[in-house]
Image 1 (cartoon, rainbow, N blue to C red):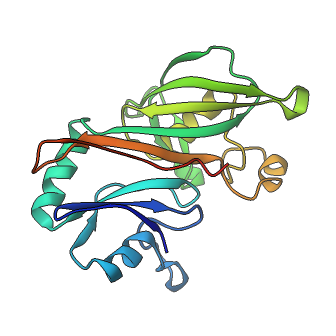
Image 2: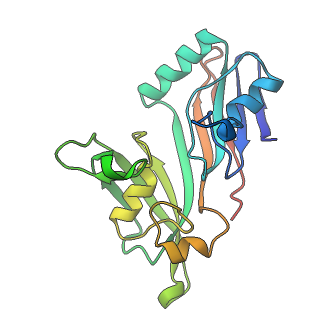
Length: 210
């Protein structure tokens, strides 16, 4: 079961393990997911946002439809702060920066996304290097990521566009490199927002498991 990080009368935050879908997918063998497991324990819980199955970390649920509306609006207005940690191939050249590249679906290779300056929707990610590790073929960088927008696969494709795919990424890392990792090294570490009812700042963190 996912770990419960926060629970009150209005919302809950859980820590999703890597490999678990956020919501059901097509196919009878893909119905087990975070939303279903949480609702089995808390029937009034509605998932507010999603993480890719390969990503671990914090996911917010609303209790009831009114709270779902209010929390969804907070995401639309970009007043919810999210921070991820990733480990990527190679050494990032800059200690910090922004990746401002529009993204669109790769229609010929779904569910992959691509950088598309013509048809893509704006996507913005801020990053800060935490540590550079190893040398040569073993070089990698631990990096903190703050997505300003919330496009599908945004962090994964933005890092790939810099030439530094995430370790273990089954879609975007080199196949031989991805096969050497037991999971994708991307974790939703922190979420912070103003509680919709109490108006008190709420922040929760999850230890990075890699």
